Amino acid sequence: MEFDSSKLTLIDLISEQHAHLRRTVEQRWEEQSEIRFSHTEWYLLAKIEQQTLSISQAALIVGISRQAMQKTVNKLENRGFILSKFQEGNKRDKFLFLSKNGQECVQKNNRLKTTLESELENELGKNGVKMLKTLFKKRWLSR
Image (cartoon, rainbow, N blue to C red):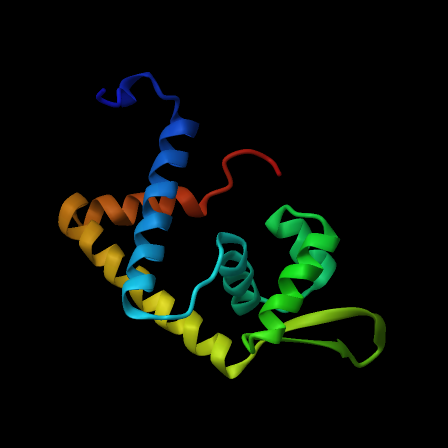
């Protein structure tokens, strides 16, 4: 049975492409590394690279409960990919940081994504990719 994308809404089309791109990056990661991460773990690692987050903030961003986030944090911390610590002046919230191993994994994964983006440029053209990036950087609806 052939998939008919003509009936999908814009939201569904974006979701389908996102899922396909994520699977491609994860497959390529698995081809080059013995280290395995879940979707949630990759998302958390990427967010920690972008900004310092507390466990509660990370749970909100990722869209899981604080308890589920704590479990994910514990797993990544035990495996040596992140560090959690209190910051000076705040003994209530633990903040998350990438360890050296975590930084290396995120950097390798970012190189995979850059390579994939170059492949998309070959398929969609540089202007096509530039236009997509411009559109996705905009705020479409109030958050």
